[in-house]
Length: 231
Image 1 (cartoon, rainbow, N blue to C red):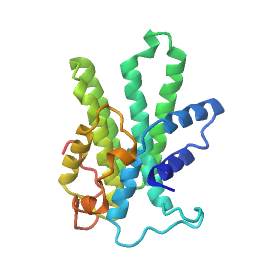
Image 2 (spheres, helix red, strand yellow):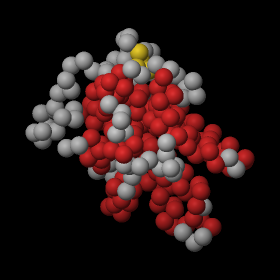
Image 3 (cartoon, rainbow, N blue to C red):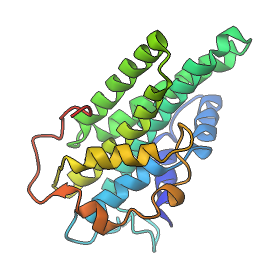
Image 4 (tube, helix red, strand yellow):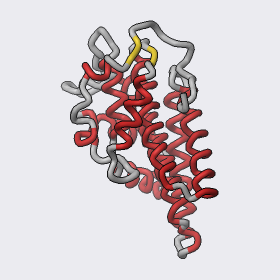
């Protein structure tokens, strides 16, 4: 299974118990139409910063190299991003003013479930603090945008999601994040033609293990990787 497919499977697995069926179907539809860039980057950082091979869990199908702990981190990052991405769309479209209030109410619930489940998956990892700050930064940016009309603030979500992916992945390998990661995330976000991510294979084509190792500090685990995304 490829990294994007593994991320999608892990994300869908993390919400498989959501009820009622209509809510679960709406969540699945939203995840199916989105890019898996955040989760894939999480996997790549984990592999780039782990000296020993990432073992396959016994419960996984043969040939699937994605270990459960890495899959959970990838899914956590992906779910938080997709929940915030949906929130951003609702803030822009304002469907309550165009007769789409019922669908919008359900979408708000979908967004809440995605972010909450993402937090749950990252809660016991060293990326938990950064996950909280990612959501806080999103809220600040959306408030500033509504007040100022500054559309460029929207792209901060993609940059912050990439930083969160780096935090979740490198923490798996007991590495800290170097200052170069912030610039790397901003550069990738600047390459986007739209606010949403393109397919992972397109955006991350040149992002290999060698490049990612150069962005991480050659030292032990930090005190929780809770530094602000604005650092």
